[in-house]
Image 1 (cartoon, rainbow over the protein chains, first blue to last red):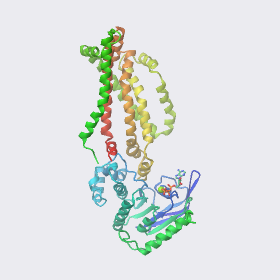
Image 2 (image 1 turned 45 degrees about the vertical axis):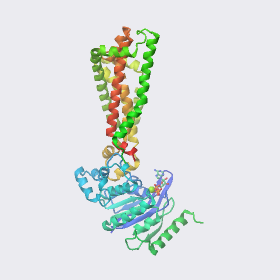
Image 3 (image 1 turned 90 degrees about the horizontal axis):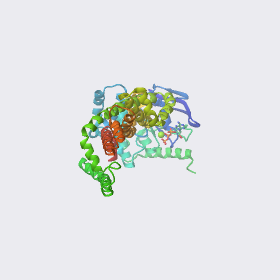
Image 4 (image 1 turned 60 degrees about the vertical axis):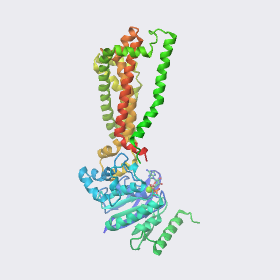
Length: 246
Length: 262
Ligand SMILES: Nc1ncnc2c1ncn2[C@@H]1O[C@H](COP(=O)(O)OP(=O)(O)OP(=O)(O)O)[C@@H](O)[C@H]1O
Ligand SMILES: [Mg+2]
């Protein structure tokens, strides 16, 4: 079943033609990635979905705005003045759920996200990886049907990123959230996705759609030859596109 | 991650030492100069004499400090309320902000020397004109701080909470208002240093009692020592209020202390 689809979505911001007839879809329980060069317009797609930017042309179906999405912004956007627990319950609070009930909903997930001992800390007291986990839990706990994750591991150092990806794959295999992930990390896209859309440089078009038929778990073990082939193919597509490969 | 508290307090005290030393030596030089030069106390009284006058006139000073404090607090409470209320209105109605903001700026260009007698003329010798003048002088720094503070909200945080389906009021309460707090305290600290001075000035122009009246009468009877005694009291009041806001800031903005100690 299709959870979300975009049809011929174009957008011009100021004088910049950012998206050019983007069409894509995400099925129920599917993990789809959007892979594209920096500045292509990946975050703009999310801004359209969450309603931060108005839709200009094209159609978005399968999900009514806002109530369908939980959004994790590119930077963690934790509120520095709220303790971690209060950051985690933010989405539930906005939904009008009393604080006590909101906390009760978050509590059983804390250990799994490695945050059980840090609920009374302020975001500034946490490491980058922990902050990212907190932002992810804040997203998940909203109980929306589709998770929109904008480069959730982009700001982390290589080692922490690998840890987090492995950890996240593990969580995802049990929960099977319908997920749309934005990334410019080819390895990450191949490791986590069922399907990958590759965007061109601005104005962004979909230049490739690739299915990743590799069995899970894919992380925490040496990469398979199949994964390697797909990574090479994606890299080739991106490099050719950005014209950096003579 | 967190430094033990005692060490911090110790460091704070150590940092205060140069300030205390410079103040003490300034008074010492003053005292020595007065004694050596034999200058008349009608021209320049020594600090020891001023201190002596404070002790001798403590009843008079205290009785006149109370009305000044009343005017200060009432005026400050009024301006705090108005600044908060207005800042919220302005934040929700950008058009009103553009229309009204110039008026507030103009209100700050009015010379107090000219305005104070008029306000006293209109509202009499009671508390009202003092309250109004204190409010007029103190409200603008707080209003500007709040309006700028709301605008400083991290757009990513706003986009996030909006994506959660938050209403404009929810966005204000959960994101814009807390973002403005560091700015607000900066404005509050500026305002509070004007408050006592404004109250005394208003009294000086026309009142029945207050430190301003003490200063006026002492000046007219050529008693600079009592003028200075009242000045010392007034400075102490401001310092105490300033310390109180600093304390309040530490409590409200505790999350910022934490940030520094990463
Ligand atoms: N309000 C705006 N007005 C004009 N141009 C804009 C506006 N918002 C974004 N853009 C432009 O749209 C382009 C796409 O931005 P977007 O943030 O979607 O890129 P991205 O693919 O997420 O990049 P990154 O990987 O660096 O996060 C950028 O070149 C940006 O300059
Ligand atoms: Mg982006």
